[in-house]
Image 1 (cartoon, rainbow, N blue to C red):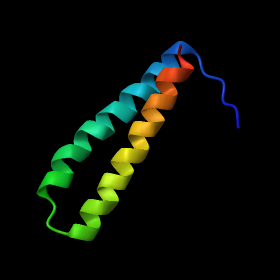
Image 2: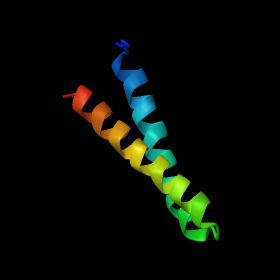
Image 3: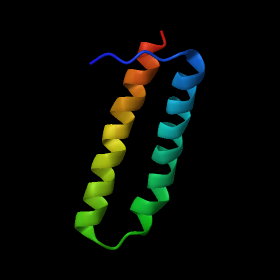
Image 4: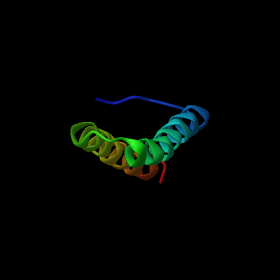
Length: 59
């Protein structure tokens, strides 16, 4: 799949992904449920991969 975006749109997506990654840190740290923590960690890991893809697309 190919999505065309201008630089402003790409920067907005990058910022949103970065904000979500940062927000997951405290959420992971404060949860008591092992299963929920694992789900949050998986989400964070997937967002990091997405962030890397976005950064590489801008190069």
